[in-house]
Length: 283
Ligand code: SAM
Image 1 (cartoon, helix red, strand yellow):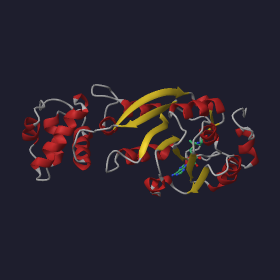
Image 2: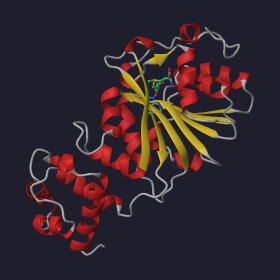
Image 3: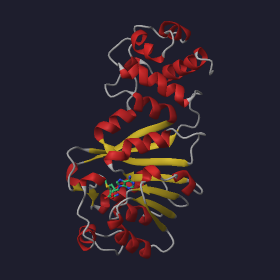
Image 4: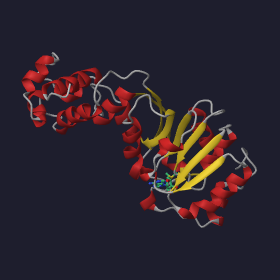
């Protein structure tokens, strides 16, 4: 169906351009334009925004974003086979779609931004977490993106939105909780994709945290790597990996040395990061 525009249905686009899905590129395409419209709606108002899309593929989500009123879509696609299909969309929406052929991991996306940017993507699973960590690790903060609406494997979405005490809580949950407000929006069944992946997907929406608790990103990474590197161990043991006295560090921030990483909220890790910097003369 192609009710949102007068372009051909995606199944036909894929056939015409010989876009058989390649596993190495994480290609699982969405053909259902109702679903892509729902993802576009989850991003919030698009009028007046530039949307950065990673991995447009044959362009199902791209079409939804343009139909939903995005002023400009900048789409980065690694697979040159998709470019002719995307050129047809660009012709349907003159001056509003810019396609960049390349590897999203190697492109300085901040430099492409002008005005408020919403990142919206059905991410290739093999690079999705890496891209997310990059977008959450930008300095200075607030970042150049105004929101991110991204699809992940459900298990990854659980890790992103987990809080202290949740089974899925770990380094990703601390980083996402420190720098953003992340909300699971809805699940998508494997059946919605061509070809179907093995697991359910979840759309996650992120707003940048307006004022993350102050600490140095590198120090936060160091303490969470040590703490969750041995997540079953008590912090007095796991934090030895930092090379400073863990008992003194934990005493400085009034955290029980017998506690385990999974019970420490984001604020606790921020306090530990600042204590670590103080102990190593960086604070
Ligand atoms: N957005 C389309 C959709 O929803 O049907 C396709 C999504 S598919 C899961 C992921 C897309 O990302 C593919 O088109 C793939 O070629 C592209 N891709 C994979 N790795 C990439 C990378 N490093 N940089 C940019 N695009 C990439």
